[in-house]
Length: 325
Image (cartoon, rainbow, N blue to C red; front, side):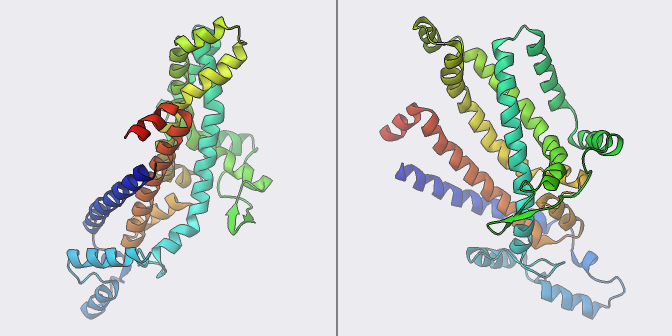
């Protein structure tokens, strides 16, 4: 296991290095931030001084080298707009995004697995077909449109839930959380469901396919022949085996949920990283853009590593393969 972990960490460093090059070059090519940050009435001397202060007068390779040196010390640059460390600015917004993404993922799992298993056990029933039809809608409907409809129904017409913002938060271990207050929970319900809808549909289809495959396996037939109750067969033998592909996909989807919560955060004015990156792109705040993308890449790498390690817990055959390797 130790050798496997070291090998994965070396791969992670290589991926981070390659992605840093692609991100830095890509962000460098999307316009000149001086055109937005400097007063149009400024003279050439003021513009030149601003370019020197921002470090934009150096060639690209030198800017990248300075970025690598500083990144090795944990410094991903200073925001052009706010003049504070970019990573500090992102970390201020990260709890809101992480809270929203984790709640959306849990919502998708807690609702998707039972619904998917029911649809797999009763594929020809009205309820099973209705569940699958709903999953198709979840895949097809645009996120922004669903968000607007949720606001229109539950905030405007019914008045049950607040339409925007994060609501009241409570400090827990130095982190501001919405789920610790009733007002915060009400503010989170709609954006979390909006973000969870695609994941919910995905989990339903994975759970249904896994259930349909598992109930035909010999170990399920043998368990029935032994006289085990149907609830135990489904809850232990079928459930444990369908979780392997679900864990894999959800691990990757958690990263994408964090990275692509931009639309949901914009629709519901949720003060997270997604809202920050949109504002930074509009202002060409390069350090914040680069820092955000590098943090997202790092999250994907860590999540993939955790998923691989969870494999060995869910499937003993993975442990055997690692031991032989």
